[in-house]
Image 1 (cartoon, one colour):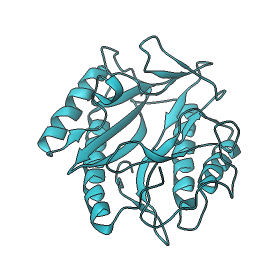
Image 2 (tube, rainbow, N blue to C red; image 1 turned 90 degrees about the vertical axis):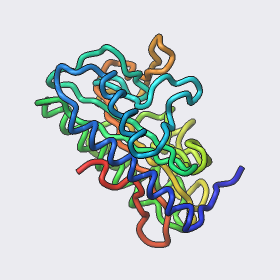
Image 3 (cartoon, one colour; image 1 turned 135 degrees about the horizontal axis):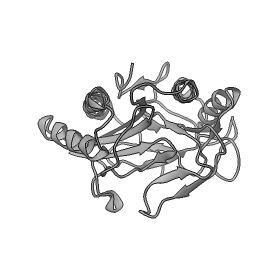
Image 4 (cartoon, rainbow, N blue to C red; image 1 turned 135 degrees about the vertical axis):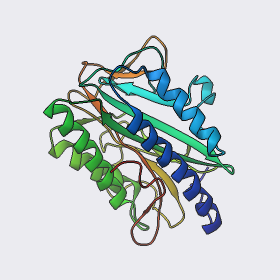
Amino acid sequence: MGIEIKSEQEIAVMRQSGQIVAEILRTLTKQMKPGMNTKELDTIAAKELKRLGAESSFKGYRGYPATVCVSVNDEIVHGIPGTRVLKDGDIVSLDFGAIYHGFHGDAAVTVPVGEVSPEASRLMEATRASLEKGIAAAKAGARLGDVSAAIQDCAESRGYSLVREYTGHGIGRKMHEDPQIPNSTEPPYGLKPGTGPVLKKGMTLAVEPMLNAGDWHTRVAEDQWTVLTADGSLSAHFEHTIAVDDNEPEVLTWGTYG
């Protein structure tokens, strides 16, 4: 299946779903504090989705049991909210998607709980910078591998490794559409710069680097969902849904952070 090109009208709807995602992630970030458990974040997200007239992209997807993914410290992605209590010094990755009028928006942000270590702050900043470099490379006429190379160059220049098995993706009527967007140029998962599909105006993509403070290898927890760093090091995750344009890409989930 080829990469779908969205019309201006379809991108306008995705802009609305993206803003719902951004608003709810901002709400979760503001309300997060030491002493609350991760299930409370899921409850807030579900209530906000209902208030805004949208549905969850995640709940029920391949059996995922929650509205938002909450991944703490060495958890990379797909953390299931539950009874875990957040502590001062934790870093928390919130990955969230919404469906509005048939189109998905998807974004992620890693945020500090209280005061965190300088090492954790540097990791979060490097991950956010890698996302921004990847987005900047996603222009019409570029190759998909150019996006991967931009993300990897930024991450590795700051001393971090990139999760390879889990990638960004196309997005639209389905949460996961073609193409997969590797965060690395290394085989077997990556794409070298100057290779891969040519990006075209109207493609809508979810770009999402995941950086580890240690090694890039991962493992899956007994719940069969939560992905962790194999060596127990910290991990961070940032993501935006974008629309490719002839000039600068449009970030459809702008305002998620900052």
